[in-house]
Image (spheres, rainbow, N blue to C red):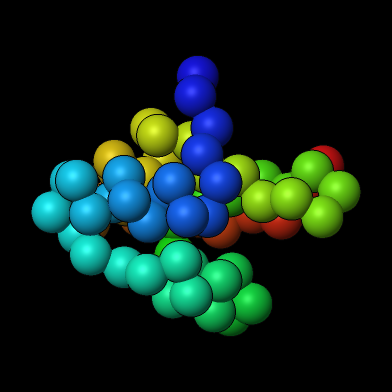
Length: 66
């Protein structure tokens, strides 16, 4: 499974037809919204699978783990 950082995730969502900026993803993380992500120390990553589900409007719980 490929993981993307915030900037890459925003670009990937754009390629799927859902345009959100990296800043929007950052704000959503603080609010507990948006696509599921994982945090490894201070870095945040998104899986392509979760981004695809999110872009299709499927519910994807946000998690902050690891």
